[in-house]
Length: 198
Image 1 (cartoon, one colour):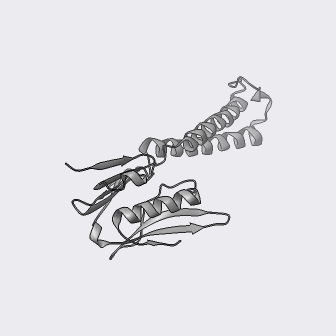
Image 2: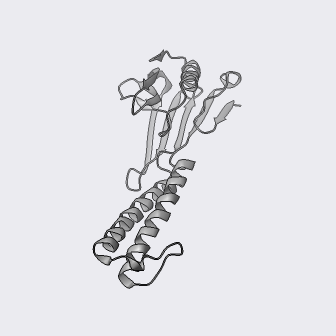
Image 3: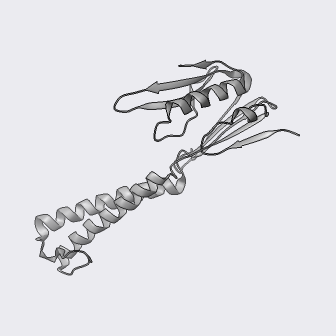
């Protein structure tokens, strides 16, 4: 019987679980609280702007909190309507990325079969499912990337023979430095490969 470990939200197993033969790591995609929050805020704001623009054109108040019928349609109402339309398109994009769970998936490491599988959801189309398969023998190292500054980046990569480095970390807010080091060390120990970048 194969021992296995399931890890949630992109976390790696603790020391006690590192002796199992299978490591299954779920990776959080776009279904995160911040995306729900921004999609909701943009939807509400864009709807308000669009209704204000329509109200100024029709001279009928469609809003509960204010009376935009006093606005002159050209240029104020027209500009508000354009802002509202652009905001609706942005909100639609945000809701669709959440619905499709862009970037979500899993990393699967199996020492028993000697296989590594990286899976992510992409945008609909012929490349909706992004799958990378390789052998554990082809894994050369686990690489940690740490870049500070205005656009900080902290991520783990799998260095595989004959391929570009494969990202393992979820996209989004940078991981805490200590957590990143721990995850990298535990994965390198699990795969029995060196850890680079620290």
